[in-house]
Each structure stands twice: as structure tokens, then as C-alpha cells.
Amino acid sequence: MSKGHSLWNKAKKIIPGGGMLLSKRPDLFLPNQWPAYYSKAKGCHIWDLDKNKYFDASIMGIGTNILGYANRDVDKAVRNNIFKSNMSTLYCPEEVYLAEKLINLHDWSDSVRFARTGGEANAVAIRIARAATGRDKVAICGYHGWHDWYLATNLNSLNNLEQHLLPGLEPKGVPKSLEGTTIPFKFNDLEEIKSIINKNDLAAVKMEVERFERPSEGYLETIAKLCKEKGIVLIFDECTSGFRETYGGIHLKYGVNPDIAIFGKALGNGYAITAILGRSDIMNYVQKTFMSSTFWTERIGPTAALKTLELMERTKSWEYITELGKYIQSSWERIALNNSLPIKVYGIPALSFFSLELNNWQKYKTFITQEMLDANILASDKIYVCTSHNKKNINRYLNKLNDIFSKIKKIEESNSIDRFLKGPVCSSGFSRLN
Ligand SMILES: Cc1ncc(COP(=O)(O)O)c(C=O)c1O
Image 1 (cartoon, rainbow, N blue to C red):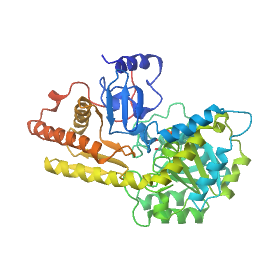
Image 2: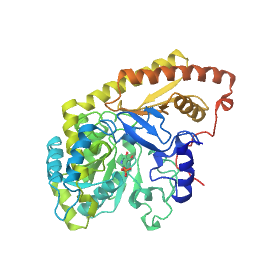
Image 3: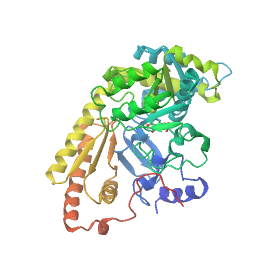
Image 4: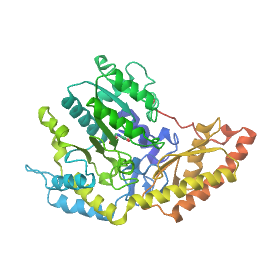
């Protein structure tokens, strides 16, 4: 048994859920075989506890590292400031510089608050919207973290969040009195959100601008117009989409401005920092309520973000990862066609997904991960592209995928996938670990 696997078995006994982020759970990739823990990571490579080196063609820290792992310049900026103390009785100046920088990138905004995680930043934005409007209900589309306000969506039906990234989330522990306060709507279904807006006294409409599909013509514009008419705070959650196709929010590409935008993940290239950016007439409600946290003032987050933004701007990283993402998407299609397999490719290019449209897809997905792992590649059904990826290392992955697709074609013809799996099938959403 690998060191990683045995540590994971121990972790499951002493850390409920095994680890603190669902999306990294080994059972989502390859139960009993996924290496689970890293000893070091650099660029787009990861070393496990047994010193095996892998090429990361998967989630790149779940989208935190557009500039690659252990980016030399970001780490250097962080190290410099660590020597001067990450904490003190006084604030760090970097938070002001970062606020200015983010405002300059988004000319509709003039005010910023910081937090350290995406879920926190989302909770902050909802609190501000409720404080500013004096209303309670919110409508949501997308994944917005783990807090009570969001999970309340599932109080009247476990299926409410089915369309929003994570199926099966149980709202146990969320006060029942929150039932009906968060209303989900389907992406690109304009009639549904119109009807929700008309029937409810909403404080906020919060949505991801784009994840799996492009917003259809006029969709964002109409929502923004309706929100304006009704005095509803429009919040774009750009924790994941930010900096992947534009230098800032992906909403810049569509020319539709929210009242508040949230950034996270890639903003600090692996260091914890999230930003809630907005218009000061709304953001100033922070001072009418109470939001304050010790580690929202530490120095590493804003230091890393400032250097990350500088490097992104210099290298135009969003253009690079978009081009490479397009290449990956078209290559997936080509490889599938070569092997006569039906494929669906989707997502913004820098966050690309595919699925083979076969009945046993979950098993084939497990098979892909299993075979890739044998070739020291971490991969499943998605790639979060970073600037350490390039055509050379991606082609190695694509060649391997071509071999795997050709095996899948033969396995499919003989209907024998079960015989080829060395362990259990990967799980698909939130489920208990025993
Ligand atoms: C759009 C969006 N919002 C919020 C979050 C939650 O962020 P965090 O995991 O940092 O709390 C995520 C994380 O995947 C996300 O993609």
C-alpha cells in the first residue's frame, strides 16, 4: 500500500470526511489508488509521499494556481514579507495597494473588502446585500461555498443544488427557519429567474457568470436590468472564472457590470486571499453590520495577490491558458473522433471538461484515471490549465489519452469494463465516507 493511501486511511479515522475539501477526495478520482498527499509541487508537477512524480493534467489545486505551483516570483515576494512578519498590531499596506489595483481593473467599482476563502467572501457579499436592501431572500445560480445561507437552498429539497456543481448536499445543521430564503435558478433560463424576481422580494441575485456554458445573448444584460429596476444587488461570483479569460472578472468580456464581484482561487496563486469588490454605496453597508476577522489582516494573501496580478499582466496569462485550453478541447474532440467515441466537450477553455457519452461513463472515467496514473499523470475528466502547461507536456497527456480511448472503444464493444478496473468506481458527488 502506498504511503499516501495508508495516510488517507488514518485520516478518515481522525478527520471526519478525511480532508477539508471535498473536491480533493481520492474517491472522486480513483478510490484506493489515488496518491492523496503531496510532498512537493512545482510548475505542473506533483511529487507524492513515495517520491513518485506526476504531471498534473487535472484540477491544479482546484484552480488556485494559474501561474503554476510554487511560482518562483510569487513565493519570493511572500518570503520577503514573511521575514518582515506576516502579522502585527498594525494593518499591512499591501491590502490597500491590492484594493486599488482591483478597482483599477474594474472601472464600475470603487470599494473592496478582503477575506481568505471563497465561501467566506460569498457570505460577506450576501450579508452586505441584505444589509443594503433590508430584504432577506436571495436567488442563486452556481456554487457559492458551504455556509448556512447557501446550503439553506436544500432545506425544502435535496435536489435544489443538483444543477449547481455538487449534488447530494445535506443541509443538516442549517436552521430550518432559513427554508425558502435561498432560491436556486437554472443557468440560461431567463424566464425562470424573471419569475423568481417578480414573485420574491429579493436582496440579491448571485450567480457565476460562466462555468460550463456561455451565457446566451442578452441573458446577463436582462438580469442586470431587472435587478436595477427592483433595487436588487447583483453579485457575480467569479471565484473560479476570474482571471481565466480576462484580466479580472469574466464579466468584463460580456460588458455587463454587477454591483458586487467576488474573486478567489487564482488571485493569490495558491495563497489564501479573496476579494469582494463593489460600488461604495452598497459596500459601505459593511459599517452598518459587523464583519471582522483576525486573519483577514494577515500579509501573505495580499502580497501574493499583488505579485500574481503583476505576473499575470506581464505574461497575459489569461490569453495563454485560453489558447492552450482551446487546443486541449479540440484535441479531445479529434481523439474521440479518431476512436469513434461520442464525446461532449464543455467549459471555458482554461477550465475544460469532457465526458464520453456512454452508459458506463463513470466507470470509463475511473478507467481513464487508472491508466493515466500508471503513466504518472494525474487526470480525470477535466483540466484546469496553467502557464506551466505547454503543448509539449500536454501532447504527452493527449497521446496517452488517445491510447486509452482506443482501449475504451474495444472494451465498449465487448461490454467488459468491469474486468479492466483494478479497484472501485470513482464517486460522483457528496457522499459519506465510513
Ligand atoms: C464560484 C465559486 N464560489 C465559491 C467557491 C468556494 O470557495 P472556497 O472553496 O475557497 O470556500 C468556489 C469553490 O470552488 C467556487 O468555484
